[in-house]
Image (cartoon, rainbow, N blue to C red; front, top):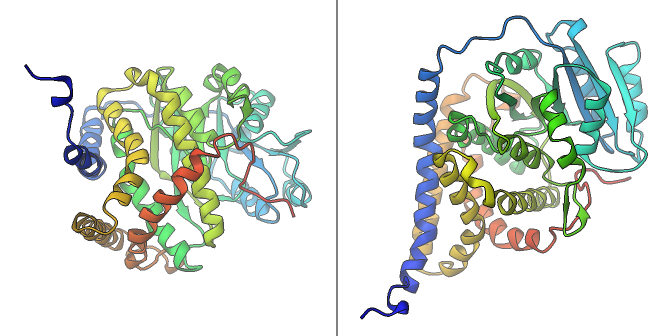
Length: 403
């Protein structure tokens, strides 16, 4: 008779799990994602493009942005959209620098612009809700305060709302300070590859699970539906301000709405230029991932099975990849994994080179810029994931420091 412990997997078999998950993720992200997206576009070719253009209010949460806020406002003012259908609101979250002065200077003389000031620092979600309450526009477009929007971006987002069930559509983000140093060059290629491939599978099933606050359009009525949940977001009794974009997107998807990515809607953002800034950003993003995975797990049944499986693989890798690195850091399996990782990065770098040959030099970097990720990724997973786990109750904005 077979005993209970006889049917448990061996240590050797358990060690194969991270490698299998990596292969599944690579398949989903770079092959199946493209295939399912092609099928979705083919079957959805009959979707009607909305007639006319709806009213839009662009919302810009701001905290210690400094002079950069003027570039964001100027790009909003230059958007190719009917002036009588576009307004924008800058929501200051108690900045300690001269951000408010700079914003007022940029808005002066433009009747479409409004500045709101919070009485206390509360985070992006509160700023977004404040703007939603102020306007009657059909759509709210969230824009980060360090972003420059391309003139045609808002039109591209609005054309993607081909069904009442589509509640949110995100744009594509590129890097403004691409050629600053090796770190920004690496992030330039990483951003490109991320929007080129990584969201295709989710996009195909109308369940993009994280739409960036850099540039995302929402139906106002849907934001009102999730307002109570946004206002009362807590963890361990502590109000948290990180991961607002991912949390909001998840609330929308789990209510049965569709979310999509529109690559034709382009904006530019500044990425961290130093390791300390990058580490702070990555810790914040990992906290967001951890909280999101834990919060969504009980309701994965509401997602399409393909998306749910992919989501579980991504979540599992967040926990298992550091163990995989530790287990194989000096043996032959670890050497093979490193070579394989570098080979994948080399292939992605080649793809980047082929797809960006016609871009201006200011926004194009060497495809080899991605290769340091072969070292940086294992190190950051090994160190930053545990750090994020033990600081989940952080309530800091962390994106801007007071002067």
